[in-house]
Image (cartoon, rainbow, N blue to C red; front, side, top):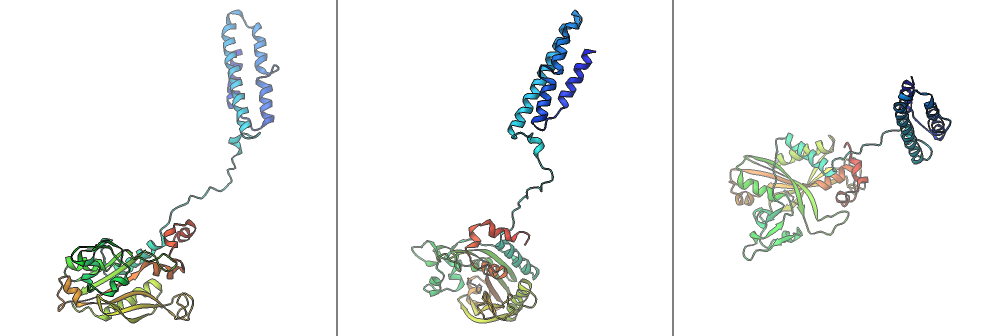
Length: 346
Ligand code: PHE
């Protein structure tokens, strides 16, 4: 009988919870104090038959220890919670803290979009080195040894050769080096775009940086014409900036294309009416382009009598700035999460 009572009390103590100081005091009075149930059972011990007294005494000691341990636990918990049991203080109705996810860099978003548009037109993707020989960056592209354009590009040189300038080693100033590498190793037809990082020795400001990104395009085959260039870039502009976009070609000069043209797209912010993005001209420049100079084809071992080609090069930063209305190039490299988070889901 007494054993059943002890068992009952053990279960009761094990299942009990205490939420505040009052309940803690009630627990103490019931199981620990001199007037509590456990003391009462100890007092009763003298009425137990002599032969059972030892076993019952052991059971009672276990019960007493259990009660004391539980009391210690409860009071420590309530102490730590400043009078409240911590476990029970959690508010299950509170919203879950947001699980922050990374997002794509705006330059990545735009690079991927450019690639996608040209891939659909049948262009494949090629890559080339960032550390390059003069030959690929300049000489093969028809820059004469003392051509002023070499200086115009603010080149970072890595090593100057003792002999031939063609062996100088530098950081590529444009992605046009990949055109040369491609034409040297592949016979036409060639239809490829070449995204990559380029370097120029410019002081960093809102409008200039020493590291930026370009996407080069090259199409060489029989009968490639200037109209193909125009149509390709017109289609690109409509896909990239909206179907009402127009393009405009302005005569320009690059040593590796002849004729050469600067490509402008109608300002998609003001729709050509004039705003501060297009500096009130209605047009924004997006690329340099032209027909591949026969000298370049020849330098790369392609028969310039049989084949013609067009090439273009566009700045990814520039297109990204136009597309998202970003007015400072430095934002792209500062990794400020307040800037980057704005492109979540873009
Ligand atoms: N490489 C030129 C630049 O960086 C752009 C360009 C590429 C122009 C291909 C014509 C043809 O300015």
